[in-house]
Amino acid sequence: MIGVGWTGWPFERVAILFASLGFLLIFVQVTLFHYRQNFRHWAQWVPVIALPILALTGLWVTASGTAGVRRVFALLCAADALGGLYGFFLHLRGVGQRVDGYRLQNFLVGPPVVLPLTITALSVLGLLAVYWSGGL
Image (cartoon, rainbow, N blue to C red; front, side, top):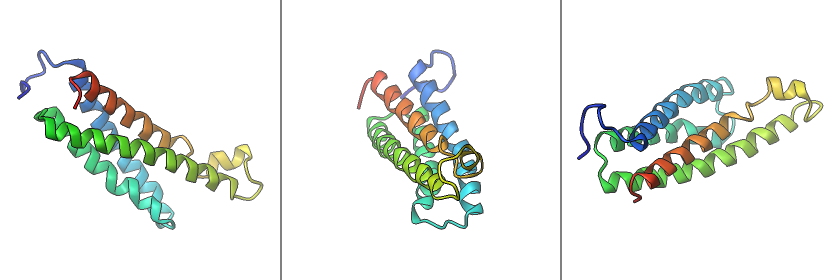
C-alpha cells in the first residue's frame, strides 16, 4: 500500500491524480456540450459515461496502487485514448458538415476539435505514469 500523506509521493502517483482530476473536469464540459446538442449521435454518450469511470479508477489507483486496479486503469486509459481519437474524427467531420465546410468560422462555432484530443493526451499521460511507476 502506498503511503497516505503527500510526503514521498512519486511523480507518477501525482500524475495519475491530476490526470484523474482532469478527466472529471473534461467530463463536466463534454456533458454540457453534448447535452446542448441533445445527444444527437450515440457516440456522444461514450465520454459522458467513460470519463467519470476512468477518473474514479484513477483516484482508486492513487489511493491504493494495487496491481489489479492499475491494470484496469491502464486498460481504460488505452481505450479512452482511442476513443479520443475517434471523437476527434467525429468532431472534424462535424465541422466539415456545416455550411461552407472547413472554414475558420465553422471551427469557431462548430464542435470543439481539440477537446477529444485532450482526452487522448490525458489518457496517454495516465498510461505513461502507470508504466513508469512499475508497469502492470
